[in-house]
Amino acid sequence: MFAVVGGRRLVAVLAGGVLAVSLSGQPGVADSFVTTDGGFPPCVYNLSILDGGSGAPRPAATFSDPFTAPRAQDWCSQNTGTASILTTPTGMELSIPATLQSHLSDQKPPLVGDNAELLPFVSFDPGMTMATRIKVPDGAQLKGTTGWGLSNRNFNPKRVELAWFAWWGPNGPVSNALAPVLNVLNTTFFNTTDPIGFFIMVKRADEDQIRLQRLDPALLNEFHSYGIKLSTDKVDFFIDEESVGSFDNPPQGEGKFLNGQRSPLLFQTWIDAKPWPLPLVPEIDDRGFVNYMTGYHQGPIESTSLAYP
Image (cartoon, rainbow, N blue to C red; front, side, top):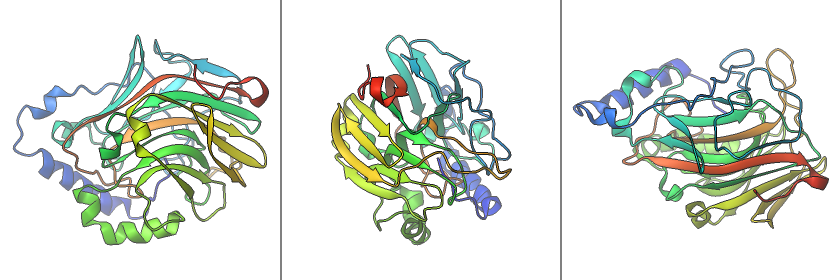
């Protein structure tokens, strides 16, 4: 996810304090949630932690995975804090715990706060379609964020590109306490003063703001197929093969890393407990959440379904 990185040392100290206070006096509570990367290798930053990326992305290609067994050769995980990625006979589960189950020992400043995230090595180009099948039960109660779609995972706000479905819910005690700061950041980075809800989000490199379109958050509770069709002149969004939005000036994989290397688009899915756009501060939540996925595919527009499977 894109990040605001200014003042990260101060924020990291604050974040550690938030978690320490949240977990103090709770012996044994944190032992009930098991942190695991699901057998996937950790994603490697392209140049630095400020650059993002997934290490060495491969060229765009037709690609499919039913998520019934971990394919470490095709995916990497970017977990922070206490988080779990599991492959089950019915699909993938990305999980974060309630704050009181979070392990303070898992927190590695400056990337503190709980986040489960999965990225493929193969990239995605205009002229392609992707689809995945996902649900996040009670997702509209999540005080952090969860989402799925396309991003170049570039942490520079100007260079970042994205076209995804996302629940944006920074409405917990930490985000409420930081509301004056978040209000300024939200009006800077989004074309709305109230970016809390379930959205389509789109941004092209060098655009100043992320464009939003609201969706019904009740969709999160049940499995739906989410499709994205990316052309050179527009990006179209689908739920269960029905059009739910279209934007011109779409992302094209034009962002650059700090070393000048192109940062291509790729699929990204995550769930976290963070009050974005302050990713270095953990949010406090009284329950855990799971992002369930039953598969993913991508390929040429002409031959790739907008629904999975």
